[in-house]
Image (cartoon, rainbow, N blue to C red; front, side, top):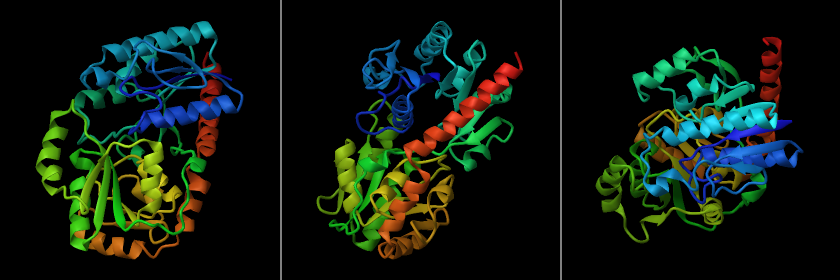
Length: 358
């Protein structure tokens, strides 16, 4: 099959350190190539891939200070991908961009499908974005969790395909050597780093935070200065910076428990299967997709949102869980191969419907 993947221009594919969408696209692209498909990846010019790489911009937009709200480069990105797909004779275009691309995608003479990687919560996305999704509701969409659909049941959802990770790249550790709790993410309020700090302080445990601080987002800088920076203390609450894959695995596998006290309805959260793959149980507030990723009482604990006392108790209990079950759950449910199979099934479904309606 000849497949065009459209990744983000905001970050490199795969990201050198922290990143979600771009890592998922990279994993999917590599597996498709490995399985013998012809793949072209539209991404930043400095992306690394086994597929054919095409780009309208040389590097991650955020590194050049391009505002998150900018859409001109995205439009060029989408238009060039569609033109290329037609000339190349692609069987399908897999679009990983969000609402900004939908209007242009409908002009494609090549079958396409859209994976939505972000939230569709009407309390979070703007009325303009909601109108866009409603206007193009009949186009083919894939969700990354069943929960994600609940905010936009009107969309033409083909199926849910969970994000997959390269499990073999995450070393399993049955007996962690560390005496610390772990939080990995981006320093933004909804990711809950401030909650993780409070949990660690109450338990008298060391907390390591591996996080990205986006210098181009003023509200993230304000959050860090107000809630995180004053709490940093060597040997107690530490920010180890933004880490690459090797360092990340080391942190996961030696942690006692991974903390995920989120303050939003996250549609997936790659940190959960990544932590579980290393054997480290996850305690999370029961919001968004968390109940689809964590088996309560088996691979971690789900706690009522904002119940800090219950969260603290759950962290204490989580240290007694069988770490091998954490690994097993990822091997059975969140592998790249399983994700790729799900997408290939969706591609066939879209192509069949496209040919039927010609």
